[in-house]
Every structure is written in structure tokens, then in C-alpha cells.
Picture 1 (cartoon, rainbow, N blue to C red):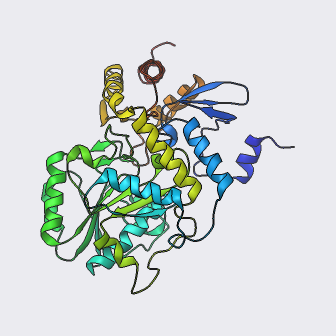
Picture 2 (cartoon, rainbow, N blue to C red):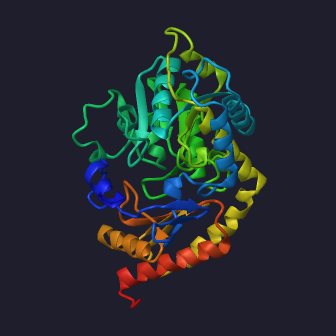
Length: 400
């Protein structure tokens, strides 16, 4: 009989030629455990998913209890299911004015797809503007507004009417015109290597969209749900988009996403045609129960209040000569090394020493740091110490 590793390599569709190949037997809190009992500190939260840690007891209990009541009953938007309704109410209450309708989907890519359709339908326009080096998902529409030519090679043609701006560059704002349906942007860019938006730039972007009647879509799929130290990243900028995208950390480890807007906008999906956007599993009651439990844990344990202290640990400990630049906000950071081969070697050395980290899709010269919000200062300090040792060993040849 083949081992799980052998089955993985032979039958699971691969995404790269160099997977980490860490075999997971169980996960708890900020740690993953292998079949041999080896413990790994998760410094990237499954790419910003496990914001409240792995198998948080509150989330597990919510999943088990809801699964015992009912799972799938009907396609999205037909039946009243309390986990879905309660989660929508909780999100809109925390988002405030301008966000009173939530459309639940299964992933970030689906949230992006729904938002793009909605923007075109509401404005009656077809032009979409996105940003160079952005990432919004791998489905065809989401990939169309992703600013990474290398990821698109061989998959075209893409959506027509899509153009790209330069992030944090005010000179490009004039390209947003009365023909623009929407501008989609990550307020803190993830796969570009964690590049926060400048507050003045995001405010100017908001003003330009309002001026010409274009919708502003904020993709907080990676930077939302507490990752930057605010529940929603746009709250730190005091800039309100017209449509907000959430996923990843929203579900406490379960697959769920959403696009959120005011009723005036969202109502365009109701008629002409009816069922203007549909989803079989969107808003699955088990996933909504998990998301609601995750949200309550973030707030109940006041996890956001701890983020500045944790951010300080990351900044202080990464301040070494071998790190060319430290970029980030909250618990979302990149340590710029400058060379992909060195980054890959650092990642594998970290795995050998019980630490999980990674690189970025559009920035393979930097190391990713995005631990669960539940990590303690001591756990984080230990993890960054392992990372720094790996960086110095690989980059500067410091003896282990």
C-alpha cells in the first residue's frame, strides 16, 4: 500500500515542482503535528486562513453542532437558515452604514467574480480597472483583474475592457473615467509581498471613483478579519469602499467568502434577470456557523488589542542586516531577502527546524510572516528567532 506522501505525489494535482511535503496528522492552536509527532509552528496561518488558530474549540463545537442539525438544504437565497442570517447580521452590524447586504460564496475568487458582475450590472458600464502585481484569484474573471502576466500565460483571452493602474501612484487616477464600472484594489497588497496602501492615495482613489460614478471594490480576502489589527483593513484607513470582499480568515478554517454592499447595489442581482448570481453551496450553514464562532472568538478574546505588541516583536527581531526590507502591518509581513533561491532554502531550513513559512506569488524574493492572531508573544518570538537563524545561515553563511 502506498503511503499518503506517495499518493499525494502520484494522484493529487500539483501546483508547483517543489511542494513543502509536510505531512499533517493533526493541528491545534498555532501548531501542526506530523505523524511522527514532530511539531511545526505555523507562521503563515495556512495563508491568512487560520486567524483564530487551528481547530479552535469554539469553531469545532459550532461545526459539530450545526452538522448535527442540518447541512445543505437548498441553494443560496431560498431557505432561511439561522447561521447564515446571524452571520450576515453580525457582519453588517460591524461594518456599519453602506454595508447592509451580504452575498455568501465559497471562496475569495468567487467573491471577486460576484463583485465584478455586480459592478457592471449596477453601473451599466464595462470597463474594469485593477492594479499591476495584484492578486484576486485564479478563476477566469478574477485572473482577468490580476496584474501578473506570468500567472496568465496560456490561459487567455481574458475579460475585455480591463486595464491596470500603478499602486500608490496618484498620476494614474486620471485613468478612472465615466466609462469605468469599478476599480478593484487590495488596501494592503498580499501576494505582491505585503505592500500597504498609502492613506492619502486610498482617500484620493475613493474621491476619484465617487467623482466619476465608478464603484470602489476593496479586496480584503487576505488582509481582512483582523489580520492588520483592525477587524476590516479599510477601517484603519477610514476609507469606505462600495463593495467589500472577504474570505480566507473569515471561516475559522472552513471555506467561505462574501461580497458585501449596500442594498441599492446588491438589489441589481434580484431581477432582469432573476437569479442574476446564484450559488449552490454559498452560505453553507456549517461554514457560516464556523465563521460566526470565529468572529466571536476574535472579539471575545480581544485578539485585536494584542496585535500591536506582536507587530513590534516582528519588526524588532527582523531588524538584521540580512533582511533588506521589512514590509507589513499588523500580523501581515514580508521579509525581503532579494533572491528566490535563498528564500526557498530559508523556507526548507525552517521546515527542518519546525517552522512553517512561505514566499509570495508576485514576490518570490521575500519570506511571508502571518501567524494566527492567537499566537502568544513568546511563541512568536521563538518562531522569528528560528526564521532569523535560517536567514542568517543561508544569506550570510553564519554557522548553525
